[in-house]
Length: 487
Image (cartoon, rainbow, N blue to C red; front, side, top):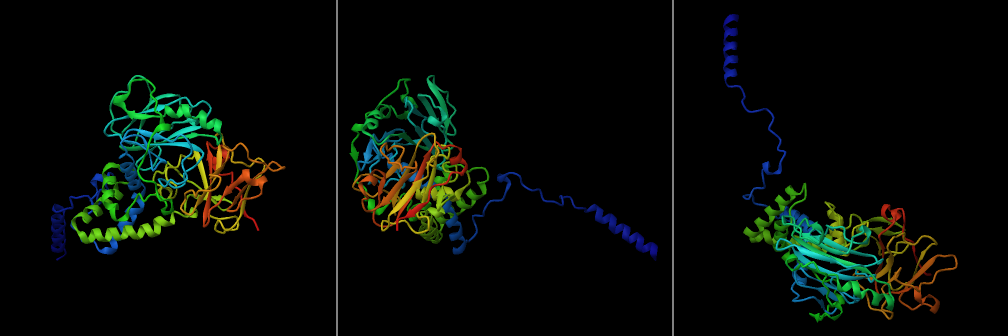
């Protein structure tokens, strides 16, 4: 009997061996994105899921939709001009320059400054490379902040880098042409979309306003096909005003409209290639956009999520405590500005509250809505900001303290003064070598007027810029001064 059972067991074992598993026990783990299964187009997504993904897409894509919409608007200008008589605008491939500080009524961008003469130009680099002219600025601080679609800077062009006068070529990610003779160097953008904002330091004196005009004329961009090796010039002081004046009471121009966002977002997904690690996120967003195209109800949910997110998450970025990182004494400082990588939090925060920052080594930004006790800054109170002796922002370039109203814009005042700092040659220092600046709605005594920043009614904020900072600025060991409320 035992022999019969043993024979039967052996036969079964041999039979099992014939049908042994042929597939590996472990399913191979994909190591490349294109080997992963993608979201199924056949699923029926519930409202809750659609709105969850739509909110993520809105937060992530907000800066880029913002950037593309600015390009579309600015480049409608038929020639270099001043939109509303105050903001540089120019056709695609060209730029326009201011010849003085920007006017306080502008609403093109929040947190403008009156430390520099600005320029602005937008490019479409898949059509043709762009030549960027750099004149001789002498000892003057200057930078050309060149941005891609993500609002990251893509070039090191300026005094901090020792950039020589001459011609530089800005090309798109797929350009394979030859660099013409006479071009000093090539800057390759990560996206076909790019823009440049030249910033040229100007002291608040009649002499420097005159001196800056010569180099400003030679700040130009134009398509490579127009390059002849000769330095061109443009008389920006004579450019016309076009378009209507903005309504400053309405705040910054509304560059992102929630109801239109997902139509424009599809363009972002097409023209802005994913960064390493973003491929899976792109797959989810493309899936969402396609579902919205096929199903009106899904698109309705997407739009509702965009509208709600704009009112909540995006709006919260306008509070300085939600922007950057703590810097001491109630201030915050920018973080990863213009080199955001996958820091989506600070990228969207910056795009909402103070778009087009320079990189940290070019400019470090400090900002606050509150006094030293945590109270909201307001025109209802008077404040002092005192830099102790030797404690001015340590910079190789220059520094400034700027005042903004509740919309992060300027409010016109009797002195037409919106910032104080290195540019002002008549600041009065205290006997101990410290510097006190006064912030108030009411005019102070005559001995303090040179150091006075006139405040508007309502809430306000203060903002320090440190251009080309020394190491204490870069590593965060320098702290902004306390803002004291005058009792």
